[in-house]
Structures are given as structure tokens and as C-alpha cells.
Length: 142
Image (cartoon, rainbow, N blue to C red; front, side):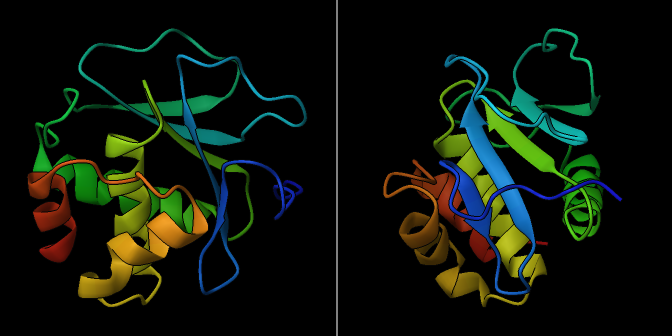
């Protein structure tokens, strides 16, 4: 088992179960400190290679994921792994797609669908989940 993220570190969301997931924007430098054990990258193009295990979901900016079933599967995997591993979820800016994915993890963690966006905005970033269709995606997840 990997040591988990520092719960007070920037960009780290604590889910109600205590699971910790780091959200970030890939346009910013990699934060100092430990590296993720697993990362889920939400981009319209293949991300660069990283030294840790990662998974890519085709998810264009300001849009929704291209493959809903693969997205549900990947988010479930990230949620399960976050119980004992450092998990990172990232897109280019770290707000829209990352916030949407984090809100879906909150739903998996027991937050009611109608409250998940507010939960992520309060505990991760006030501008997370940028578009009406991203909010609707969370409201209908999984």
C-alpha cells in the first residue's frame, strides 16, 4: 500500500469516506512531493508518458467523455484505488473535466448526485465543473 496524499495539500479532495484524490491541471508544473501511484488523464489527445501507472480517457475540453462506459469503469477504478493509493485526476486546466470526474467520485462515495457539484466546489475548487452539460453528467452519473 502506498502512503496517501497529505489531506491539506493543494488540490487534494477528501471524499466523505476519507479517500483522498488529487486533482490538477496538466498545464501547471507537477506539484512537489510524492508522485501518484495511479492517474486518470482526461484529455482530447493522448497525454505524455509518465513514470506511474495511468489511464487516458478521451474527453475533449468543455465537453463530455467520448466513451461513457469506459469513463464509468475508469472512475470506479480510481475510486477503489484511492482507498489505499495516491490517485490523481487531471485535465489541462484542472477545473471542468477534473471537477466533473471528482464530482462523479463523490457520487460513488455516497454524496447525492444533486449535491456532488457543490461538494467538489466547496472542497476542491470553486469553479470546478464548468458547463451545464458537465453538471447534468454528474446529476445522471453513473
